[in-house]
Length: 388
Ligand code: PEP
Ligand code: MN
Image (cartoon, rainbow, N blue to C red; front, top):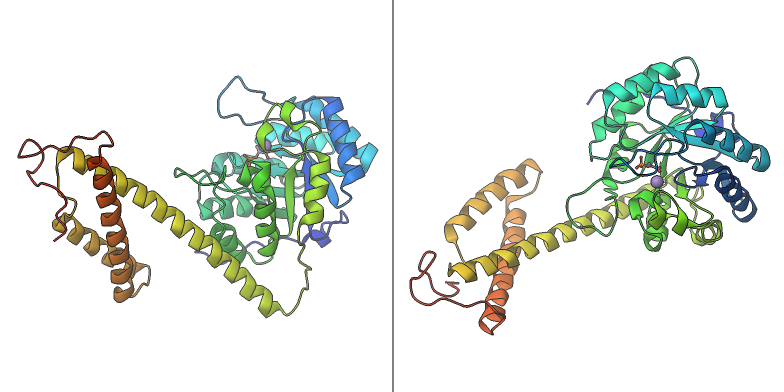
């Protein structure tokens, strides 16, 4: 990877009176003048830690027909919210026309959304529209877990002369079941930070969690990893929200959440201890992901067990397992893993997989509805689990 050319300014040098942690709150979408003003006022009253008010004026919807944002009038409501509360304003831009409208309306800061970051043409068009302005811009991670795309978007802004750039971690689309709406994959923002040490990264636990119940642990994790702040979707009446209704919280709940989080002091303890803690937190997250993947793998083993039972195929297929082990050794060694470790790990996985499949067979035999055929009626003609 090419050496970093990104030298973003820290929040403290953005000239906006910002420091760490930076807390941004506000609704997913600006829906009406009243909704924007009520929410901003209530945030101001209840959560003094909040420095900036967010609201989307143009909403990227997965399918047409949903609420696509109020558009340009929303920028006027943001301006009013700022005048009434003193909160800085921030909104999402996806096109040069959005940029132009925001600059004209005096929006303080912008963010590039997770569906725009992965498109280099869009990001370049936005960067070109921003050339010569130096308005602060946050770049959300791309929806797909692709670190270079995230880096590339930040570099395009930096190459256009912007110095007030930062990143927002909002999690990644994932095809396996996870407890989250968007899989956090903490190692990706950690690697981003390793590539660009000066970059401020804030967390967006709302879009990671997708559910207020998960908000606190995700927000705490971000703070434990030394993030520079948080962006939390907050709506005066979440159940009535026109987008992301499930994940938004009220200003009162926001205040409670912010009060409960443990904030790291920027200079807490010796730097060494902080670094150790960051690594430990990351290891904890990776262990969780390993277990999640093992869970998914064993679920599939169980399904294969059912299939073998239905077709009267032996559980143990030595040739198949020999090929799996060959592949695991080749792949594992590329990952820097020792052969004895690969062997022990894969043996443990194999044992558990056989146990699962045997369990499925036993349940099937006990009359869970699957008829075990006898004789050579189907499959390979093997009969029953062959564990020898
Ligand atoms: C949002 O912040 O409301 C939004 C659309 O986020 P993302 O781009 O992360 O999906
Ligand atoms: Mn949203």
